[in-house]
Length: 233
Image 1 (tube, rainbow, N blue to C red):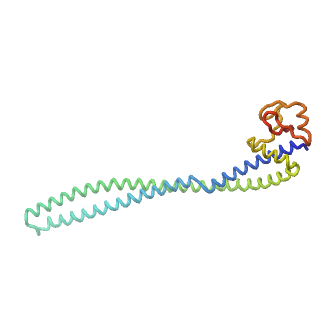
Image 2: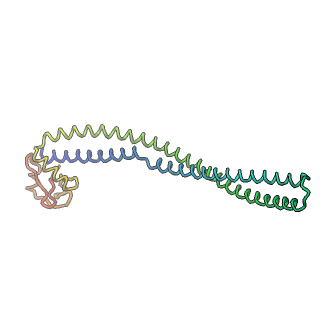
Image 3: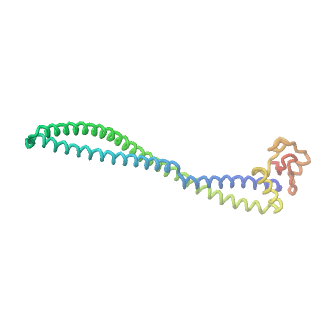
């Protein structure tokens, strides 16, 4: 078996191993950082704060309305109890009662506005909770798929690593070092096949003599243009 063939096999293994390692990193990142849940949680917290703020505001207005109603009721009682005979006092009480009535109407209008806003906020809160629940459900399904993929990739990586060790045993150390240097310089492609009599990467024509050498078992031939190791099936 030619040395270029062994290096070509090694490159195929390395390329697949690189791909698996990259994918495993992506899976780890996806499992530890699900942006859907983070975003949905933030929206839920914001909706909770808004609903809480409006609930407090609504309680305050309700307390004001109740206090003014009690005050007006007391004023009305004094006005119609018959105990007060002074016309000016009665006139003042009547004026106070009317002012309280107007103020209560104003407060009730404000109360209605806040109540509507609070109901809207509660609706937004329910929707935010549903969104988070859906995100968590999707994450569980996706994570199950990712964990399954992760397990298969790890098994494949272990198998490929064993195959790589076996292939390396048939390649001289000096050729392995040369291959690694080329791989680093040539974006992962150190070995390239001859296609239609030329380099499969840059298209440089290969002489018949060099093609014969490529098929030999001991000699490595390099593309005169891009410098990669040539292999011909």
